[in-house]
Image (cartoon, rainbow, N blue to C red):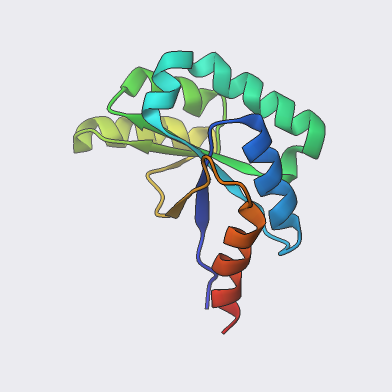
Length: 138
């Protein structure tokens, strides 16, 4: 039986660090989720610099990123070429198949299914992680 995959919605670097450190106790690579309205204000360069900061602190293999692109195809193509791990995109089937070809060449998953957990403005993320992963062991 496969473990459920959870994506953690975050807004700040501090939240991302606490999710990564908390998930190390359960030996799980966390998937950090960015919502589309949050990204439209800062732009794609924000995601890339955010990833670089986390890579310098924790290494490349300790986390993955899920970016919600909404219906912005150009944003999805840019994120796919920069090798963000997972992309979420809403569009028609023709455009999705073309972007999926670009994503496959860059080893990026398009529209994966995850259970999304909101970790924004939480004081103690470790308790939430404990609740989520203790249910799986039963």
